[in-house]
Amino acid sequence: MRRLSLLLLFAVTLGGTAVLDRPLSAEDGAGQPDSFLVQFGNKAIADLTDPSLSDEAQVARFRELLYEGFDVPLISQFVAGRYWRGADEQARREFVEVFEHYLDQRFRPLFREYQGQEFRTTGVRSDTGKPHLSWVAMTVDVGASTAAKLEWRVRKDPDGYKILDVKAEGVSMAQTLRDEYASVARRQGGLPGLTRVLREKIQQGAFTPDWAS
Amino acid sequence: MSSAKPAPKNRIFDLLAAAVLTGALVGCTYLPLETREVPVQAVAVESPTELSDAQALQAGGAPSPAEIQTAAAAQSDSPPAQSAVRPADELDNAFGLTRTSQELQGHQLAQASDIGGPDGAEDDGDPLEIFNRFMFAINDTVDIFILKPIAVTYEFWVPEGVRNSVRNFLRNLRTPVTLANDLFQGEMHRAEATLARFFINSTVGLAGLFDIAGDSGWDYHSEDFGQTMAVYGAGEGFYLVLPLIGPSSARDGAGRVVDHFLDPLTYLLPMEYNLGRAGMTAVDFRSRNLDLIEDMKRDSIDYYARIRSLYRQTRLHEISNGEAGDAPGPAVSKSSDEISQLQQ
Image 1 (cartoon, rainbow over the protein chains, first blue to last red):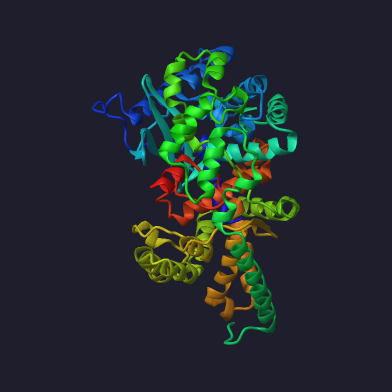
Image 2 (tube, chains in turn cyan, green):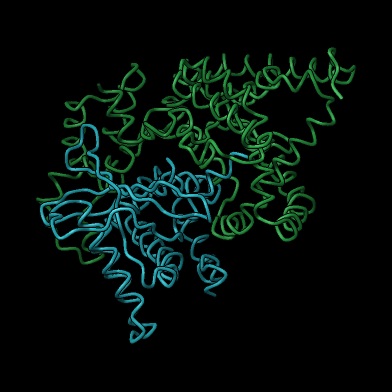
């Protein structure tokens, strides 16, 4: 049980408050992965905490941002793991659609917590053997005297950058979902069963944080 | 308060612990990392890509770049439903993405491996899953009816400063185990930090109640014999949920037993004291994570599987001291970085 403290940092980072370690300066190049992340994060905070946006408009904006900053189809395929291959096109489309709903329900409310905050990064490192991948580090405050290291995995595309994953204290969000989904898919008859379970939970509002429901 | 010889109850406990250690070590021996991590035989081969990956891994290494290229070429001829990587056009059309097929062809396989490698063989590494889920449910019940109420009460009534001192004191007591494992792993700088923390906090910090060393740059870290075995190449073995303790593995369970023997307080103090110390550690942890655990339970569609995944990833992180979070390790599906490192 003691070890769970680190494991749980993963959950915290999803709703934590950014610690401002290194402000983005004007000298930072706009073409760098950390600059991309800072600019994208600040834009997302500004857009999704805009009080003039209706709920419907906020949902639409969140999904636009999701596809702008993340490679959602690739992440969807990754978290589906081996069950992706055995599924037909219809099952895959339904899973991606439901996974997008999951992301919306789980993460959009968290932006309320970020109102007035700014994304700040603490460093960038290249991925070994993969020059088109970078890890952008930042620190998040997870308590009065505790901070956790967060790393975003960012891929450089010809037309910009895409976020592929986020790690907190060594725990990958994509890998965690992949392991969990594999367990459910195995017992529920593959990707359609996993999609059904996710859809039921979404309809129950199960992924909405308590304070936001 | 202390005695030179262990009490009879302690001797019985030691015998039981030795038996568990032996069994767990046998488990580690029969389920080493290399043979359990990629169970090629158990996975249905569905595409040329998966076949080549599996063959390469079975031969003792990851697919080479050339093999990956070959697999990519073969994959392009595969039916979409059997593709080992994203049929990008299908998904992109479905969601109105604007990248062309040509652009995607060039990056298709590389992108699929950017997150965690080609989705090939996966293994839960959990042959005792039925037992583990049963034990997990028991632990969860104990948590709901005993540990959580105590933790809530503790968190509500005890001031934060006192709770921090309790944690500092418990951490200070663990110094001998951490120090021994620092030395076993040849981590002299970390051993120095452990020793410095102990002397500073035990004196200026009033028997460990205050973390003066932490404020002076000697940050706390923990080591255990499970990590030491991993550093020397021991595989995780099977996943194991221990009664009251929670997520573990054959290797880490054995490591706990060794740590028990490494701890001088095992011999100096009665077993009741050590049980109380373990209980206080659990209450301290639980009180610091009340909301987070509730969040995790609500957010999971398989709480057991999520905890299992988090435990394994965190252990990898701890084993590498946070320096190589992408390093290969037991029982976690191969990430792209793991494959990259195996290729080197």
